[in-house]
Amino acid sequence: MTQVLPHDLAAGLGTRAVHAGQVPEPLSGAVMTPIYQTSTYIQEGIGKHKGYEYARTENPTRQALERNVASLEGATHGFAYGSGLAALDVLLKVLKSGDHVVCGENLYGGSHRLMERIYTRFGLQFTFVDSRDIRNIEAALRPETRMIYCETPTNPMMQLTDLAAVGDLTQAHGYLFAVDNTFATPVFQRPLEVGADVVLHSTTKYLNGHSDMVGGILVTRRDDLAEQFGFIQNAAGAVPGPMDCFLALRGTKTLPLRMRQHDANGRAVAQWLAARKDVERVYYPGLTSHPQHELARRQMSGFGGMISFDVGDATRARRIAERTRIFVLAESLGGVESLMGHPASMTHASVPPAMRAAMGLTDSLLRLSCGIEDLDDLLADLDQALGA
Ligand SMILES: *Cc1c(COP(=O)(O)O)cnc(C)c1O
Image 1 (cartoon, rainbow, N blue to C red):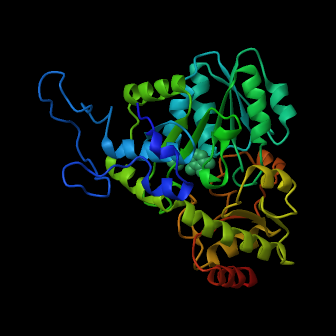
Image 2: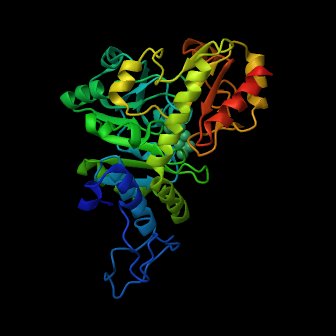
Image 3: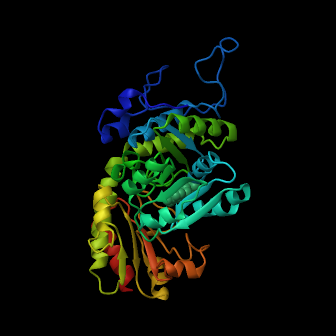
């Protein structure tokens, strides 16, 4: 089990991002945590070792990442996995056949697929509701309900769930409350401080931030959950390799710095898009026109770089997506480079058209992940693509 050291929780977020979870390497004093590329560790005698026996169970590079992210989220335990979905897989393995989960309906497609196509086969039950209104969550509760699982803001419609309200509900009734904090990151949103029990990340996105690895993590303050996450990490074995942990750890060092730039670019690009007559709608929690802007201001300290916008015409949307030069047409998000996506044909192609239409996910919707480039260059790129 990877536990956060007391000194990791005391400093400010920027300091913790750089230092938490890391100690100089004992052999040489190397400041950077090495990539401990080993499967096993020498034992001085039978049962006599330094706390490391086999790398599925313990790896120092992985532990440094786990402690670092746990500290950033204000958690006391972290467990890293081979992908964000592997982290969700572990979270669901805490449940048992017959248990029921209430989820936001606008989840990451892969999360929905894991729940509906795999875990229902093992007897878990899921209800997907519009979690913008807590009454929909309350109405879905059953005697077998064990967990409430939310993503906020959602992808790509940027819908929000009131974390404090759900936190109050789950704490009053003893439900497990898990939040996928991939979009907002601990820099802008702190679910554990308003009643969540678990935070999940796809470290592939903002935490790593450089689009060069795939990984996931679960963090918690609850010792009972930590024990299970660690047990399943070892027993089921979906661990990340030390190289990927090293890359993610290098990423988290600059997370607060990068998020400031993602946020600044996101706000400016959203405002620029909202002012254009040839853009029908802009979905960004930082805009005063966002229907949940007040909630966004209450529970987020920044709005980040994710924006969706509707250009009203599917052919035009495709043309724009293929004409940008700086915004790269690609899946994923959260890297230093700006990306553009067409949700209806890319990330959300597996969602039935009727369901897409019901949530406003039209064929003319485009999604941006604003990187950290110069704003003027991003606007010029969008301007030439939209004007074409
Ligand atoms: C990408 C993503 C995931 C899945 O993470 P992987 O690392 O791709 O497995 C889960 N949730 C959100 C919000 C994501 O963006």
